[in-house]
Length: 273
Ligand SMILES: Nc1ncnc2c1ncn2[C@@H]1O[C@H](COP(=O)(O)OP(=O)(O)OP(=O)(O)O)[C@@H](O)[C@H]1O
Image (cartoon, rainbow, N blue to C red; front, side, top):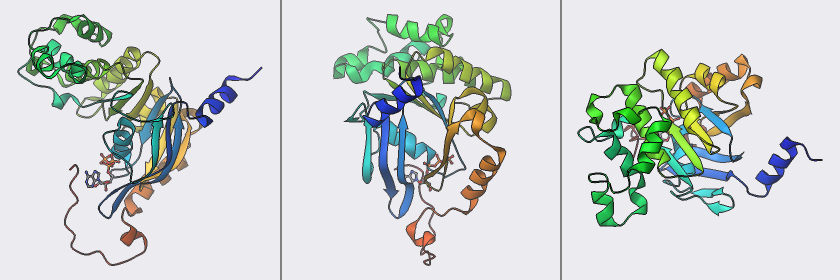
């Protein structure tokens, strides 16, 4: 009889799950992700950690299909990723303050509606039940009718999760869900996310290494656009973490910097186009 690990490896080799195959993503001369190969199985809970500018958000956006690689492929179950396979849980600041919690969550499904219905549904919902279910999953169903502006940062993040879960995607991506939260809310928000996920592949970018190691099974360490380690949380050594964050300070992102060529200009690179 095959053990679970062998079965999972075979599925991944046959293109099951989310697969990055030799992926490179450039922004001009800046190489954000450099020849990355990675296989993640359905149901896994993965934390991506690394220093600032390492390429973590770019990896997430490639997984969401909102960025296309310059080289290599990103597939889910063998097909190029699209917005319907993966959902990116944007941070709580992306909510519309003056609208109610329910209305914000309902905007999570407008991609699947007609233009007119997509406009009207968040304001005058005909089918609020799916959104109320997602709010229940994140413990906020009682607050469905209050405006988002009256919520705490942690509650806003929970609404953002509920909105992302409306897409019923098989891959859930969260970029820094603990940002702007106090330490006790940070633990709590990861517990909420954990409880709301139901068999989907969860990939979370985290700055807080302790939370990553405590709450996630698999840790992918990224620096300079490359994967430096990919290991079960229990196997990540302090030396690996020190090397990862030390590498961040010294790893160049451009080919010119890597080859020691003189850098021209020096204008800051914009974060997003
Ligand atoms: N849209 C863009 N245009 C130009 N450069 C970009 C763009 N997005 C990211 N970059 C650059 O790509 C590199 C990786 O950025 P990315 O945001 O993926 O890093 P990160 O690890 O998520 O960083 P942080 O932890 O600070 O959010 C950085 O050098 C960044 O400046």
